[in-house]
Length: 470
Image (cartoon, rainbow, N blue to C red):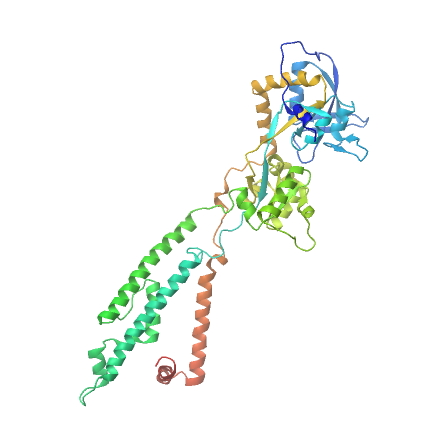
């Protein structure tokens, strides 16, 4: 692109000399009823082939300029924004202005998106600004509220600590058992009496009792029995203290996670690093660069899925809502197009549903100016620019933009604070898994007792003590 054309982006320097008067002059004014920007301009076509501008921001701006300059106009239907045929012929509103069919285009053309058109047209002073936005559905924070409380490293250390406590207690049990076996009993002493004297409450030292005590301590519950030897008491004290401290941190973290609303994706950088697919508005050339950078540079994708190319990630805005709602994806376009009330209603979704379901994030703080334009070199540029500057100074342009936004954009009364909703089945999956495994284990043990021992407690316990818990 020839950089010499960039001077057409700069505002006209207002000089203290008389400009051409438009009093009573009839101008050809072209506008485009873009279906993605319904309230920018509405056009009615008559049976005799003429068209009429009826409402919209562009129409309101035209009336303000007509009132201040006192010109007449006849409306022309714009074909599209702009384009060039293979034979280098310019078409669209750019071609209509360049070829003399129209004197001015009141369509709010993007000065950045239509940069190559500067060879043929000159932009007026910008009258509105737009930002690129990505719309998507926020992903859920976690699949299990219990597991998400601690990181996996803490869970691993937690398990290892309890294994260490259990092993330590079993070692103490082994030492006392060895001492008991090496003690010579007199004829008057029974084994039960020696156990009570040397190792009080020795049942607390069995493998079964140690495991059950550990589970009880984890749940911060008491136990029906406590050892009397100092070494075992020390292990009990350590285990209970550890369980108490961990339970405090677990409860605090769990309460914080459930009470605090955290948005998983807050910035476009978060989105780019997520696993959500990114689609772009196929009408906007700059969006193609953004989508390509996300896939090729940020995510470093060298090859797409079978049947997918970078071109398959661009679509019409009217198809974007259905894609976002049926797949994990986002869509990039201008803010007033992404939040357009007419587009959401055409897709079959109410504004309330839009606010509850769809999230929107501004890609960057960069604003993209939009402006009307005239033929390159036209004297009308300076005439209109002077009046536009006066309308800006008096707040008229600002007011027209506010009215446009209120009429077209979906206004959500609440923010995304309540997107999480109630807890689901997956959030409590670990609790259901533990209870289910416990029930199955109990039934399995019952069947073994029934089939092998006929539910005789003495026989079952005797067998288990000989083979499982000697």
